[in-house]
Image (cartoon, rainbow, N blue to C red; front, side, top):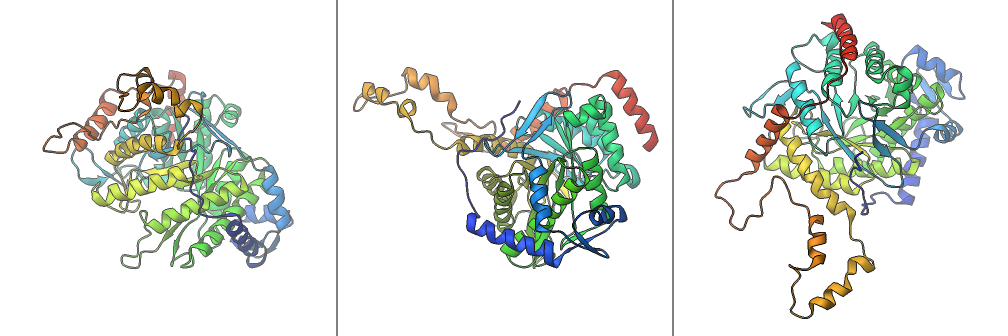
Length: 473
């Protein structure tokens, strides 16, 4: 069972006073300004509550939020595909776990270096790589393979991910109906719906549409997740200057209100339904009009949003290890390292988009390998410094004496492995005249693809999944 990155250091962006002000602003948006809600079934759930419903505008009460915060789970347990414990999140240890994509619109082919459409066969590559790398704990199945019919991309990609990935699966769906189908397929692997609920190895991802809009797709996906007791991320993705005010505080307040609405809604559907705080408060780049994935403001705001999640004592789903660059170049390395460092010091728990490039148009296996190594190094950094009688080692210092050495001491022999040694970077006494990093990255990918074996599902399960596949292919 992975420990994730355990933090003894932390960066507090929002203190108690700032959190209180953002909370009050969010309350105003929820209770006075209101949210636009789509879907008759969702609206009917809200009409039966204390909320005021005026057409599509919904105004929840502070009491409703308080009650929802009492019933929402404060811890999250996720399991491997085989049902063994894997991820445990609480607000005591502040662990963080990272995930990449099973598919995307495009892939930066690690063998040719060219960007091309993502194909169904690439799903297995990404699943094998994610399974092989120690610091990739979950994979996000999106449903974007170019050689699969759009109306069944979600189901086919999810089926392939079920077959080829043995850790936690995060998934999104292109429509409402496919969500229940994905849950039902996962239940086949888990040995039934009850087993899946007790030991979930999947969690759903869905979004509102900022500003302050929750269309039928959002409310129905929240409802289905809650009714099935499947953990769900509710992730407002806004752009300051576009779909949120050009103010970090205002953007945080708006996104916080949008998430809190989702939290209240899930608890109305099913008290105790697990929900994960998501927030992507990025910027609208006024030069290019893209929503930036590498902006410094974006990752500062994510860090701040994790402070809000900690205030409500719910798990937080963040973003890091991605870049606006098309390839893994100097820009890509700089942005990815900055983000991973920020995340390591934040209160985030589940971090997605590792390896995503070109503001979420593509995924790059090379970037995933590099990020995996950086995360391993940051584990050492995030531990901080322990100062006690043992670590001060006064007896060792005194025994060595003035001008002494420690190379041959038992203390060094016992503790030197605490130092992080990168699998990619060099500290050779004499460095070669060319960089070896890219070759090592390619070799890691080659090993994952050619030698790593993801445990195969039982034949009976594979046969049942094949029946499902015939419905879509």
